[in-house]
Image 1 (tube, chains in turn red, green):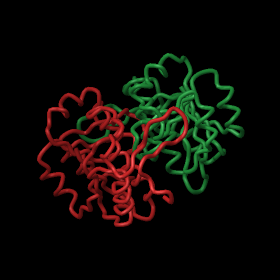
Image 2: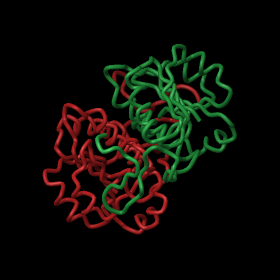
Image 3: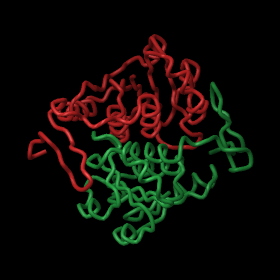
Image 4: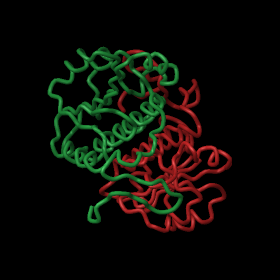
Length: 171
Length: 171
């Protein structure tokens, strides 16, 4: 399961695209392809992965159209104009490899044609962060707490307050 | 179902908090309480609701602690340090009224004590947008397409391209 974010605007969108990447990672994607590249954002996410574990990485992409065309699986374009996620899920789940694509402010019309599925997570204006998180959650389920030894630092779920194991003191 | 966003930084977070509000609206919340107030953001969301229908509004809150203390239902603080959402859901769903609370960069420790439940949508750094969307989706289900006549403009789900009914040409 991978995510492709197109139309990123470095310098304008860093926090929003960072949230897309963090949601992709937290909800079980392996990587987020990013066009155009943003080294600083990729390093922010790499530092999260170093501390919190896992293999997730932000991968810069020059030619996203070629990535979409050659992707060996389902290309799922998340757009509020698409077909309902609820009815599309069974078909998407049949594919071994899935690439979820989210656009920025202006989505190139070509994406609507080249995607395997155009899918709406609700037909209202919302958020690419929400769309990625909810789609991954519906495909993979809710993430489970990390087990001991799986990451340099991890959270111990607690009813009140914060419990982190393995964290360095000055984060 | 309502959302409370605390620790908003007007001027720094407008897009991210806008996405929290849009996700709250799209996934079925009635309102988002916002502290501190942000008139411009509230107006952005009001204009979305005027065009796309529904009663959702951003409500400014001066004293969020009092809102949390006096809320007549479950106050669910979404934090990566809390108990797993999967195991908390049945208890949350028993309450007729639910207030989902998301913090900003610095969450006041008091919130951990005054919340009815501290709940983690995955125990990894991710996004308040994702947390709100996924929690609402797990409580209320995926949003359905709007029916004819329910809103000034609405999307007709389509496999390719964009179909909007009732939209003015120059949006």
